[in-house]
Picture 1 (cartoon, rainbow, N blue to C red):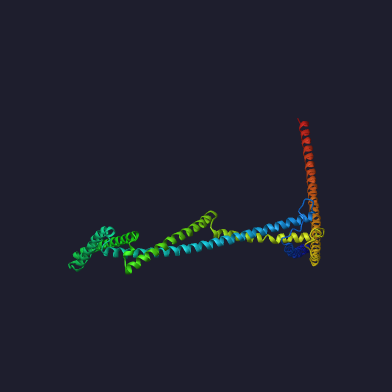
Picture 2 (cartoon, rainbow, N blue to C red; picture 1 turned 90 degrees about the vertical axis):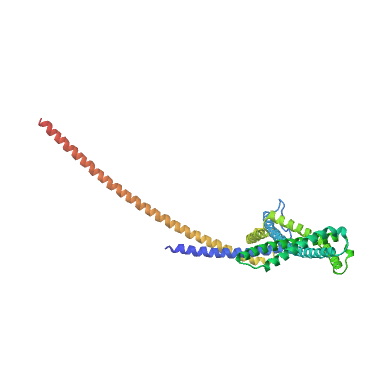
Length: 378
């Protein structure tokens, strides 16, 4: 193996290492320069500005564009997280409100039932209670009949067939009993509701009076809760509709985080561009407002590394040129040998042709002699 190729690999490795070191050095310088620049506009942007200043201004504009994109994405993430958190809070508040509303409605229904029973048991109030008492009597009678029928069926004895028939009748009677009890409870509920709506609470005493007061309190709370729940549900609907149009907040946040990570990966290249611009001696005047004395040490290191990189590249090119020359010389020698080989083949072919031409001439002479012999002996 040609030792020179091994030398080239070593030089290329050294060149890559020096280039990486120089890039990291200038990248760090560029990052420091952006920190010094801050929110200022130190570089001219007018058409008559020096090219170096315009370049620095363009790099700064690109840096700020990346910063703004990250800042906007972060703000949007915060907004989405806040809306998501608010949506969870609304769900919890609505769930708690609905649960409390259900509890209060159940409590109010129980009060209506108790007040209805109390009203129907209280003498008088015929204008409200009269028609309802008749319905209550019918339902109580039905309930009594079903309960008696069930007791009679349970006491009846008999064989297996009688037992099966009895159980079927008991099941039917219990279903009817349950329906009648439910109807009676609804009747008491309606009676209590009508009683309160008619404003007859002042006629009650004791527990019934307390229930009437409690019912009024619960109705007030339910009315207030209805307004609160309506507002909460409206807010939830707006957030949900926004999420429905824009897409899942979790996916949007994930996409924004990926975009931020992608943009952050572009900063090193921007730092390097500004650092490389500052390292050029012709650009330092345009960047004088952000350069400091200690930066010259970086410039010296960067220049030394650049010199080493250039020398390494030159050495690589020289070795490659020498290898190419040797390759060309070897190719010339191979071509010369091929030509000589072809020339030898041509000479051999030429000799063969001469021999064949001589053979032809000898054959033609023999033919002539033979033809002369034939003529002489005709």
